[in-house]
Length: 82
Image 1: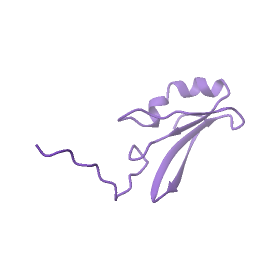
Image 2: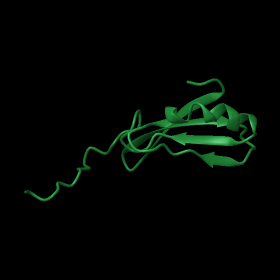
Image 3: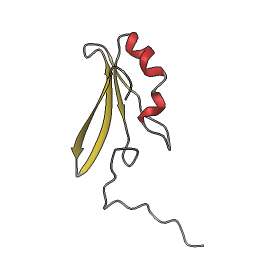
Image 4: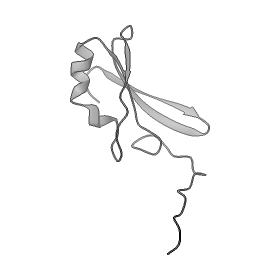
């Protein structure tokens, strides 16, 4: 974990999600979603600067990435058979 950050988990619809929070709880909230094939740590360089600017940061791991889980009932749809 980065200095000044903390993590928490929440569960909804049987899926457990991992999130990282940072910054001033009274500051304006900014959600930093990661891109494809990454996770929250991709924001490690901008996080300290945004914290110093007074923002409250919410940095989630999206469903199925890093410590967030994917619902076991979900299946990736198969493409057409060739």
